[in-house]
Image (cartoon, rainbow, N blue to C red; front, side):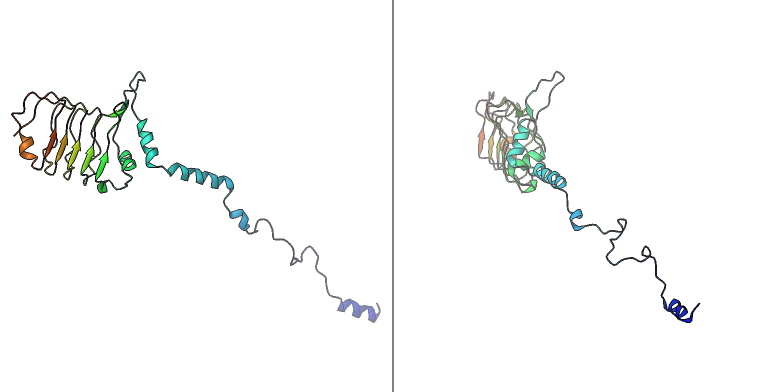
Length: 215
């Protein structure tokens, strides 16, 4: 071999295979590729389902009342007896107050010609600051579960089916008691003794035969 050809061979640099040299512009493998910011955005379907959930939770007081207007139990024959029930959700919807202990006035009367009425007094225990309560035009038969309403000043239970005055012996702040249009026959003696603040007692359209016990 000639000396010139030897020098050229020694000076020639070894070339790496093109397949082994990573190009600066070559794309990164899909297994290590960073997620695109656009791919991290919530899909339209997910946004739509979220909006639907928000709409379901956006319940107005009118919606609550309308729902409970239709809430009643059916007997074994599927016949609706037309009984409504006093629940905390209903109280919050009618009063537009989330905290029951802040409610001072509550109207739970029913339309005179309504086919669904309250039959039981219930779930009023947390309304400790209630001063005015209207339960007229219902189907209530017993005065009960009112012992927590110590600040009550006006109680309207007219046009029900009450036959006995009871459950209000503790109401020393009660000033007006409307029991007109019931089935009361007897006035207990404690009404005039324990209800010291009582100024108005309406017993019209009842079955009271004598008021001699009331003094």
